[in-house]
Image 1 (tube, chains in turn orange, blue):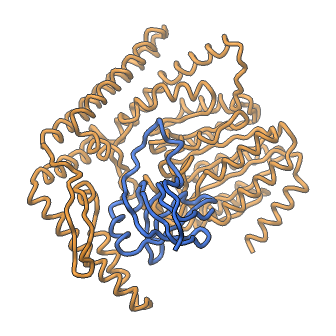
Image 2: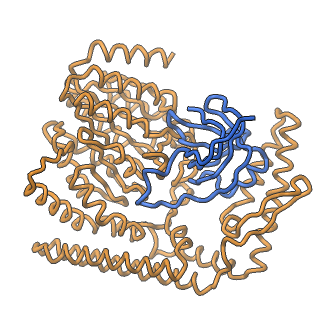
Image 3: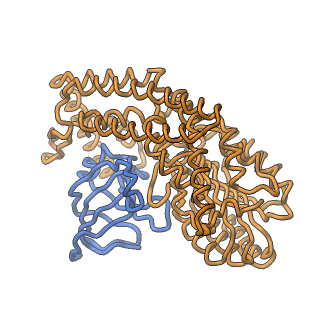
Length: 477
Length: 101
């Protein structure tokens, strides 16, 4: 029935609303079952206000949430007169993408479309990244773990918008949103709440939607939002100036915006994986060179910048970076001093059922929670509705994972350094010097450096004879 | 689009969907491909469950639409972000074409 309604909606959007601008609001997925609200409700409220103030100018479709009563009531109230598809499921998302393409086909050149996304977002998958749908709570802050949809589908939308000369804006408020910049083009402005390798643990999407007012352009809203955002992230924009500023400092700042924390009991983890993967002398040497490069860029900005306050902020950023690097280096030194065996050394795991078994590297054994897999297989064994062959398979795999866990435990006896390594990582996870506060400070203090690089590029572009399109500045609400 | 038989490099992640272990390429997109894993393949990919990874695998049976299976998974590794190469880190790349059984 919902599909039928959406198909009717596609048909109606082609025939009745061809002269209008469009607003598509997507997301709200990955939130726990039973909760009455979602963490994205701030943007529902603020975008609802924009809709109420501008509903004559923007034909609006909301495909948000699913199963959270208060959020649904808020959508019904704030988006009265908009087309609402309650469940943000995979099938609805596919239909909405088709509907979006159909809308663009019917829009006159120069018309505007905003696609506003706010959901849990994964690390890079494909060209962009994926976001959580409704009906499945996130299990991992890096890969979501529940049901997701890929934003790669928007590549087709941006391509068609360019062909039809439609002004398109994609605002991605999710974690790892910087990956969505990969679908930007000369007609499509993409704005992201965070860099591609970082969580957007901030109020960026809420603030951005609050600042959306008729007459403002997207570039100015981005900067107003960036200045007012509280929390962790590294907001990005697809203007030529933004791409330059981001390329210059984001990769170098990346390790210093990693941290360890938890969200609803789910680890928000980047720092311990990063340190474990960089605990060799040669990689530390490379890290030092990159830090030197970052310092040089910040020094250059500081020299160019004559504004006192800005200089103070840059000095503060450099101090915080040096402090955090020192903390990271201390952990790296301790890991290197352990003289760990080669993590690629392999250990065989065999059972009666799988005599050829598998040989796992130390890295694989140490990073795998076999107890979790044992529990999962046990759950299958308790399911009375399964076929005998499925139960036998689950039993065999459970026994294999028990053996793998035994091999893992024997590694700790054979190589006590691994016990030390785990202790160091445990200590790291509790260390206040590597928590979200330091990463948030650094991402916030980097604002002035970002602004300065942005304005340097703007000046360069002004002086050059090339007229580079700026789809964000040209997009006036 | 279904893949022809042959040896491939694939970027994706292993997961348990329902009762089955699968390897998913281009997850959530219109070009999603799903490969059902046998016991030994599940065992091999267990450390990589729900994590971005790259595998080298052989397909020797015609795919049924977007569903398929591997005759062999030759290697697996974590995908570490590499800014210089990010745009190429997805999908499946044919290494050697082969005959279907």
